[in-house]
Length: 168
Image: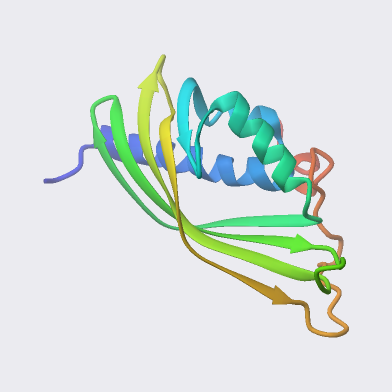
Protein backbone atom coordinates (compact mmCIF):
# COMPACT_ATOMS: atom_id res chain seq x y z
CA UNK A 1 0.00 0.00 0.00
CA UNK A 2 1.28 3.47 -0.87
CA UNK A 3 2.20 5.79 1.98
CA UNK A 4 0.45 9.10 2.31
CA UNK A 5 2.25 12.36 2.99
CA UNK A 6 0.90 12.23 6.56
CA UNK A 7 2.38 8.71 6.95
CA UNK A 8 5.78 9.94 5.76
CA UNK A 9 5.71 12.90 8.15
CA UNK A 10 4.72 10.59 11.03
CA UNK A 11 7.50 8.16 10.10
CA UNK A 12 10.05 10.98 10.14
CA UNK A 13 8.82 12.21 13.53
CA UNK A 14 8.96 8.67 14.98
CA UNK A 15 12.51 8.13 13.71
CA UNK A 16 13.45 11.46 15.30
CA UNK A 17 12.18 10.23 18.68
CA UNK A 18 14.58 7.29 18.48
CA UNK A 19 17.54 9.45 17.43
CA UNK A 20 16.81 11.75 20.41
CA UNK A 21 16.71 8.64 22.62
CA UNK A 22 20.22 7.69 21.45
CA UNK A 23 21.47 11.21 22.06
CA UNK A 24 19.89 11.28 25.52
CA UNK A 25 21.81 8.12 26.43
CA UNK A 26 25.17 9.42 25.23
CA UNK A 27 24.78 12.85 26.81
CA UNK A 28 23.14 11.41 29.96
CA UNK A 29 20.35 13.95 29.45
CA UNK A 30 17.44 12.89 31.66
CA UNK A 31 15.04 15.56 30.39
CA UNK A 32 15.67 14.59 26.77
CA UNK A 33 15.26 10.91 27.69
CA UNK A 34 11.89 11.56 29.33
CA UNK A 35 10.72 13.52 26.27
CA UNK A 36 10.93 10.34 24.19
CA UNK A 37 8.32 8.50 26.29
CA UNK A 38 4.72 9.13 27.25
CA UNK A 39 4.57 9.48 31.06
CA UNK A 40 2.67 6.16 31.35
CA UNK A 41 4.99 4.26 29.01
CA UNK A 42 6.09 0.72 29.76
CA UNK A 43 9.68 -0.34 28.98
CA UNK A 44 10.55 -4.04 28.78
CA UNK A 45 14.22 -4.86 29.33
CA UNK A 46 15.17 -7.80 31.54
CA UNK A 47 12.25 -6.57 33.66
CA UNK A 48 9.27 -4.30 33.09
CA UNK A 49 9.91 -0.67 34.07
CA UNK A 50 8.02 2.60 34.10
CA UNK A 51 9.67 5.76 32.77
CA UNK A 52 11.01 6.94 36.14
CA UNK A 53 12.61 3.56 36.91
CA UNK A 54 14.00 3.32 33.38
CA UNK A 55 15.62 6.77 33.50
CA UNK A 56 17.09 6.04 36.95
CA UNK A 57 18.44 2.67 35.80
CA UNK A 58 19.92 4.28 32.70
CA UNK A 59 21.75 6.90 34.75
CA UNK A 60 23.15 4.21 37.06
CA UNK A 61 24.33 1.99 34.21
CA UNK A 62 25.64 4.75 31.93
CA UNK A 63 27.63 6.40 34.74
CA UNK A 64 29.83 3.28 34.87
CA UNK A 65 31.32 4.11 31.45
CA UNK A 66 33.70 6.87 30.41
CA UNK A 67 31.89 7.28 27.08
CA UNK A 68 28.99 5.74 25.19
CA UNK A 69 28.00 5.86 21.56
CA UNK A 70 24.56 4.72 20.40
CA UNK A 71 24.18 4.34 16.66
CA UNK A 72 20.96 3.62 14.80
CA UNK A 73 20.89 1.50 11.66
CA UNK A 74 17.78 0.13 9.99
CA UNK A 75 14.51 1.71 11.04
CA UNK A 76 11.18 0.26 9.98
CA UNK A 77 8.03 2.20 10.85
CA UNK A 78 4.42 1.23 10.16
CA UNK A 79 1.91 4.01 10.82
CA UNK A 80 -1.79 3.45 11.46
CA UNK A 81 -3.44 6.77 12.27
CA UNK A 82 -2.24 7.96 15.68
CA UNK A 83 -0.48 4.69 16.51
CA UNK A 84 2.55 3.06 14.97
CA UNK A 85 4.90 0.10 15.28
CA UNK A 86 8.63 0.69 14.87
CA UNK A 87 11.78 -1.43 14.93
CA UNK A 88 15.14 0.34 15.28
CA UNK A 89 18.41 -1.59 14.93
CA UNK A 90 21.15 -0.28 17.19
CA UNK A 91 24.81 -0.70 17.99
CA UNK A 92 25.78 0.67 21.37
CA UNK A 93 29.43 1.06 22.33
CA UNK A 94 30.47 1.61 25.94
CA UNK A 95 34.02 2.56 27.00
CA UNK A 96 35.13 0.86 30.22
CA UNK A 97 38.16 2.12 32.16
CA UNK A 98 40.94 -0.27 33.05
CA UNK A 99 40.15 -2.07 36.27
CA UNK A 100 40.73 -5.37 38.08
CA UNK A 101 38.70 -7.14 35.36
CA UNK A 102 40.94 -6.00 32.52
CA UNK A 103 42.49 -3.20 30.46
CA UNK A 104 40.55 -0.28 29.01
CA UNK A 105 38.00 -1.84 26.69
CA UNK A 106 34.80 -1.39 24.74
CA UNK A 107 31.63 -3.27 25.55
CA UNK A 108 29.49 -3.44 22.41
CA UNK A 109 25.82 -4.41 22.32
CA UNK A 110 23.83 -4.97 19.16
CA UNK A 111 20.11 -5.27 19.23
CA UNK A 112 16.78 -3.74 18.38
CA UNK A 113 14.25 -1.49 20.02
CA UNK A 114 10.70 -2.56 19.17
CA UNK A 115 8.25 0.23 19.90
CA UNK A 116 4.54 0.86 20.07
CA UNK A 117 4.28 4.58 19.37
CA UNK A 118 1.31 6.85 20.01
CA UNK A 119 0.61 10.38 18.89
CA UNK A 120 -1.00 12.26 21.77
CA UNK A 121 -1.57 15.99 21.83
CA UNK A 122 0.05 16.22 18.40
CA UNK A 123 3.31 14.59 19.55
CA UNK A 124 4.71 11.13 18.84
CA UNK A 125 6.27 9.35 21.80
CA UNK A 126 7.00 5.79 22.86
CA UNK A 127 4.08 4.13 24.67
CA UNK A 128 5.71 0.70 24.96
CA UNK A 129 9.30 -0.33 24.21
CA UNK A 130 10.89 -3.76 24.19
CA UNK A 131 14.67 -4.07 23.95
CA UNK A 132 15.83 -7.12 22.02
CA UNK A 133 19.49 -7.92 22.65
CA UNK A 134 20.87 -9.88 19.69
CA UNK A 135 24.53 -10.17 20.76
CA UNK A 136 27.29 -8.68 22.87
CA UNK A 137 31.06 -8.52 22.68
CA UNK A 138 33.92 -6.90 24.57
CA UNK A 139 37.06 -5.64 22.83
CA UNK A 140 40.21 -4.38 24.57
CA UNK A 141 41.79 -1.23 23.16
CA UNK A 142 44.93 -1.88 21.15
CA UNK A 143 48.22 -0.97 22.91
CA UNK A 144 48.87 2.75 22.59
CA UNK A 145 45.34 3.53 21.43
CA UNK A 146 44.01 6.59 23.27
CA UNK A 147 40.44 6.03 22.23
CA UNK A 148 39.54 9.72 22.14
CA UNK A 149 39.07 12.00 19.17
CA UNK A 150 40.54 15.48 18.78
CA UNK A 151 38.54 16.97 21.64
CA UNK A 152 36.56 14.07 23.08
CA UNK A 153 32.84 14.32 23.71
CA UNK A 154 31.26 15.36 26.97
CA UNK A 155 28.54 13.34 28.66
CA UNK A 156 26.39 16.34 29.55
CA UNK A 157 25.18 19.65 28.13
CA UNK A 158 28.76 20.95 27.82
CA UNK A 159 29.18 18.66 24.78
CA UNK A 160 29.74 20.53 21.48
CA UNK A 161 26.41 19.14 20.19
CA UNK A 162 24.71 21.45 22.71
CA UNK A 163 27.13 24.36 22.86
CA UNK A 164 27.46 24.80 19.08
CA UNK A 165 23.80 24.14 18.32
CA UNK A 166 21.92 26.79 16.37
CA UNK A 167 19.30 28.57 18.43
CA UNK A 168 16.00 30.19 17.39
